Image 1 (tube, rainbow over the protein chains, first blue to last red):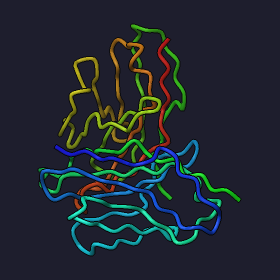
Image 2 (image 1 turned 45 degrees about the vertical axis):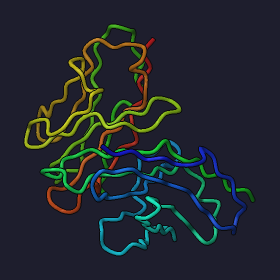
Image 3 (image 1 turned 135 degrees about the vertical axis):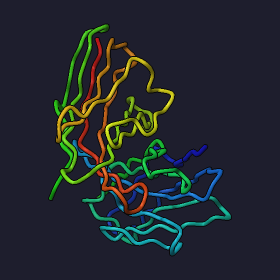
Image 4 (image 1 turned 30 degrees about the vertical axis):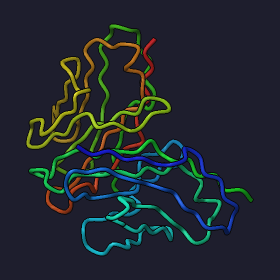
Length: 117
Length: 115
């Protein structure tokens, strides 16, 4: 069984400041981990993924995340926030041993990122 | 860029009525999914579908729910007799066969309101 915890339902940062969105996971098997972003009235868009290769993963729009097994974390960061980063961010986990690759994702509750001018 | 399309964007129905939510996955994708998000809660997996059959379903996906791929392009979710607690945003997703698990492409969602 897997679960995801995202600390902070809302995070507010100033434009140009560091963005840090926290995600902790629980998984009985080595996980695959993902960050998705949702802009208003749009679907979920994949930002980046960890699939047991490099622990530091770079994604789109300048975001990156680091897999830390000892901390069971996969926090999302961006060095300098932009107004266009305002959105809902979801962390998700998937089991690596699922048969057939047709398993579903387990999501966190999401973090609403607010960018202040 | 190819995208997953969901219709309608908002569906209002009376309790006890049947609803069908429609999705057009990306054309060369072979795995299909439905998720839901109750307001203020997390996105929850409902069901996955491959090769014309359900691959996996969650405990939420009870006998009131069914999925179908009636033709080569549509993927539908039917709720037989809606309850108030079925009010949620429903997301469809699809992915290519092969590749890495989890690269699912999501639609914009259908907001279902049960009155």
